Image (cartoon, rainbow, N blue to C red):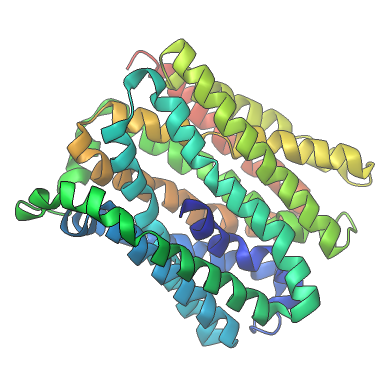
Length: 377
C-alpha cells in the first residue's frame, strides 16, 4: 500500500520532460506539483488521526489509495486544472498512509525491533520511487504518458480492493475507539508539549526539504544540466531510491543496536550534507560516479524516515501513535512543500541545479546539530 501510494507522488517528476508541457507547466516548475501534493498532505495530516479513529487503519488505507488513484486518473486527463486537482487528491491520500501503518506497527512491534520494523515498512517509499523511475518512462515511451498514468492508477485501485479481507482483523479490533474520538488538535498539543517530539518534528521538516527536492528535480537536473537522456536519468532516479531502500534497513538496524534514534539521525544529517556537496563536482563526471553519488544520497537523504517514525512512536502510547505520527509528518510535509520551491529559487539564482542542491544541503546539517544538542532525550 505504501509503495503504490508513493508511486503517485513520484509519477509526474519521473516523466516531467515529456508530460509537463502538455499539462501546461514548464518542466523546470514540476516541483510545484510536488509542493502542492505535500501542501495538501500537510493540511490533511491535522485530521488524519480523526479519520483513523473513525474508520480503522485498513479502511483508512483504502481511502488513501482510492484518492491517489483518482488523482492519477485526473492527471491523465491533461490540462492545467487537472494538474492542480490531481495534486490535491494525491496529497489527501498520501497523508493517510503513514498514520495507518504506524498504528498497526506500534501495536504489533516490540521495542527491541521497533526501528528496524518501521524502517523496513518505510522502504516502500523508495521502492515506489524505483518503480516510478523505471516503469513510467518506459510505459510512456511505449503507450504515451497518459496511458502510463491510467495503468498505474488501475494497479493502485486493485491494491485497495485486495486490502478488504484485512478489515475483519484490524478495523473491528479498533472499532471501540471510534466511540471516543480525539479532537484533531489534541495530537498537535501533545507534540508541542514534548521536547523529544518537537525535536523530531523539526528534524522531519529540515530533512524532508532535501529529500523531496532530490526526488522532484533529480531527473530534470540530469537531463538539463548533466546531458543525460530521459531513460538514463530515470536510472539515476532509481539509484537514488534504491539507496534509500538499503539505507532505511541499515539505519533501522543500527538504531536498534544502539537503542536510540537521535544519534543515528544526526549521523544521517551530517552525511547527507557532505555527499550533496559532491554534486557540483559531478557535472561532466563519468556516469558511474554520478550513479554512485546518487546511491549514497539515497542511503542518507532518503534513508532516515523509518528511524524518525519509530522514535516518534517510542514517545507515545500505541493508541496515540497514529495521530501523533500524523502531526510529526505534518511538519515533515511542510518541509517537502518548502524544499522544491527553495531548490527552484536557488537554481534560478545560481543557474545550476547541482549548486542549488549544495546550498539546500545546509538544512540537514542544521537538523543534525539540533539532534546532537537534544540527544539525551
